[in-house]
Image (cartoon, rainbow over all chains, first blue to last red; front, side):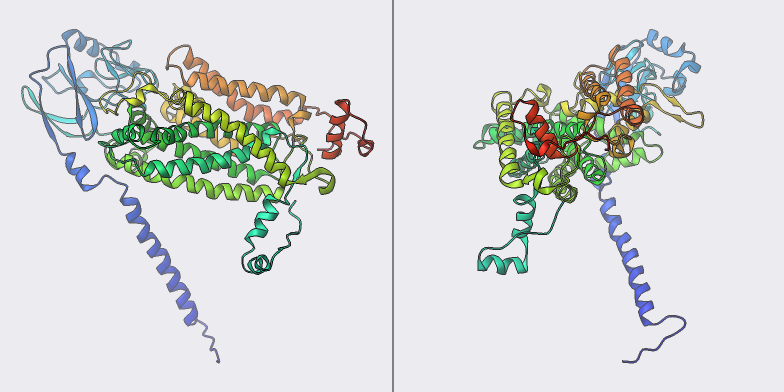
Length: 180
Length: 439
């Protein structure tokens, strides 16, 4: 069989390129679903819808833990002394500088709502413990103050405050995880 | 080391088969006629022990998977069902759980043997790196396996380890969500860990095949570190010499394994893992299994931000990097050790540093089991420094300054010399054994 040489490429060159392109694009297209399936599925996302919480049963000085999106959150009714201790800190001395006012809602200073997973490696810190009277993480020794701010130990960040609003004086609605 | 094949099929069927698939030839050349240095000591039986342990783990694991349910509401109870209702379920589970620990006992002996006798040096760099990969796969497999019973330590171990990846800048939190399949360690996480826990041992088996292949290309190292020069004088055939020696080592190892599985089945575990996993309560003291403790200590040792002037490594990322670096540094060992002499038997200074390193590892293990408070945090940092100093300072410098002892001319000479020292009759073949310093 005689073969004809074309300067701009022959049928084989075309097939070679087309096959290569189809393999590359097709390969990438197949890989994507296999990565995407690892992400939270629709039911998990739906179960993470906003929740409301009644605060009226939490006495002053007490805290509760709630579970939302499979993760615990602290809801703490702070005493006057705890609020004052949190407000009196010079924030320039903090690892993750934030004022106490920034971490609570205006007019609701006694309510501190934070994620309950230590920002180090996710353990649940113990309430009313540690050198600063806030929380102490038993796993790797992080100390948090009464505003949930990191004061000592390996955790890099303050306990994050989730997105929430007061729907009434004694009722909050948690709408989203903390903005990282 | 692999010469021409001397396999001769004895039967007609053997010849017919050999011409079509030379599998018996491969077995004959690799495990029967294969020459092994005649001076191997019992530390060389741990490769065989590890192979047997891998098979044992796969067999017990496949059986356990027949009775286990990978769901957060059912997993814990299915384990209890295995322990109470399934015939011999208790035995199979205890063999599997303690088998994991025994696997690590054997791999640490195997690795330290490689370290002591310089088995990672040329021409065995690939062999060594394949071993490091097997070790990494083993750690991933063991970690995911420990999560499956969904007890308190399972759950919180998974929380701590998956959160390591959140330390990665920018993409960390997204990676963690993809690991979890949700917003926390939950049912999707358990399901995928079960799937991967089943897969990884077979990947280990694949890398083990490469490891053994690489071993059979270069041949085994030996206690003198002197390469085989004369196959007739320096080696013996694998069968029966190494097979029987390995078999004896395996039986002795199984006695230890059986003692743990039958008499101390929970000694190496944690009592709190018999409490069902609860995402609202962290156990008072989260510790990994014993074989991860040194790395856990390194992870926790970095409690401060590292300021590199150009940028700052936050303490959390610093700990994670240190921990992964502690494993990654092993892969660079062939190039970090500058000594031309392989065996530490001929390196008087390295012998001391080697044992100091073993002590450092044991100390890190002990520190990893302690709570994260003074003085353990400071000690962890010191011993982390010593761990890295061994690889990054001692090994590179020692090769330049150490004066090694005279090496034997050959393996045969070393063996004969040893016989003479024992007081045996002098053997003529060793008469010309002039010591030489060449590595």
